[in-house]
Length: 367
Image (cartoon, rainbow, N blue to C red):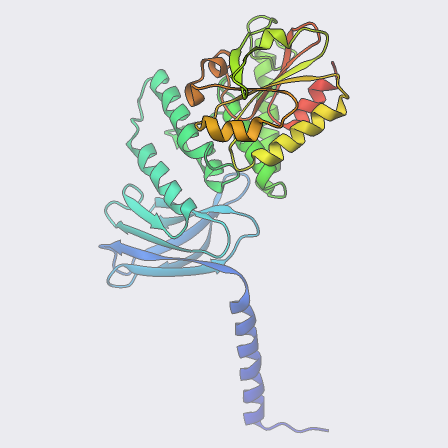
């Protein structure tokens, strides 16, 4: 039988506490620090939203006399949006894993004028928030639509799979969402973000949520319009395109579609970082049909020479649109996000559109 002295017990307990502390400190964590001018012993609360949109406090601290603060919190399993709450005013933070974010603001302007630094996502979100806060709350509908298109081009399209794009979809103006999945024209933005998440973050819990939101919005939109399929055309007819291929030859869609084979019109950017994988998957669709499918791929690249290098070995028709993001062809097809697929049947009738390879394969299964 071993008898322990009080000092031995204290040593053992101290060793155990140190071990527990070391284990806790070894867990992945992120840190938010900064300075809030004019804040003296002011509470700073770190909050996180659940999947029902309810914000909950997960950590807190107080500023020093000079306004500085620091919070270290366990890193999320997947990228998340957090926010700092100071007296009911908020600064939003994109957290991927174990970064250190620095917030600079003043107590008087907290949530209105601030800077978040430390990661590209944080800086991107700060730029968006600045632009969003400057946009008039009572702007007319056409100005709001133009603002949303600009936001998509400058923030969402350039950063597929970023948690910042998810954050943008959740923003509200007064009591209304900036991007409303129930609005006739907004479902395409949700579809674009869902596609980006599916390609880059297939296991992220936001991915399934975005996909479900998009599918539900499309069903309700089609139901309101009395449509059985999500076809973006007033009439079921061929919307022709006439552009030059990588050899400089003029290629018309009408020379390809309606010649006895289903045809897929694809709008994409050939020089995008994920383009090789995209074209590989498109090639799988093409080969699966065993010569029974035509593809007419319209590229909206900014660099014609880089596009030509990427397109030269593809076995289907690839054409370059020099108008790029201002493409009239894309406008006629009501393209709101890339990539976009449009399906013609063997008779040259526009029968469906798709936003990803799953919906493309499902559409082609019926023709």
